[in-house]
Length: 253
Image 1 (cartoon, rainbow, N blue to C red):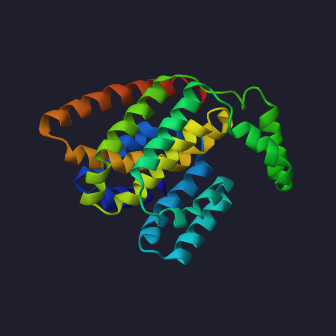
Image 2 (tube, rainbow, N blue to C red):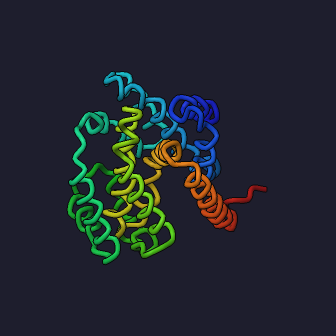
């Protein structure tokens, strides 16, 4: 099921860089999707199908596809209100301001999301309230992140995609939707950094922006920079894959 959805998705949005889309899928969470978060992966696949309906402003089709996704994993409920977010106008200065603010919050490890969740936890429905309170009480799930290679990669990715964002969107107006998805990916990592369980769940919902925006960036590069891009992708992709393969869940008996 995932293969056929992704085949159609990459054929539609990556065009001649179809295979690069598959490589980026593998490097950026695809391996994890296909091994350990199978239900969540199905809700994400349904979201990928729904994106074209958001672009065509067909709310009911978008709504019901993502409602179906909620039956696979409750986190998919986040996708439903994004329909209205995708219709907003870009404000690059605000995007940059939020990125700088989030980076400072992340680097200085300023608690932001945890106090807010504590404040609103009593108003949540029973099951969600119990789960949230369990995670908040756990040192493992509520731990903060620090400066990592992943953080440096995300910082670099934002900087280079932000620089090329206007050209990417001018070449293909559909990329405005994926740029907004990318912003959600970046901001969720930065502003939720004091609550690790959210870091493990929420950004995965928006990682699909990498699979599309990077091939679009690749298409804009000059020949010599294309080689540099592919070398860096090979090195970083090999490192990520090797790291994942050291985890216990990477091996099935």
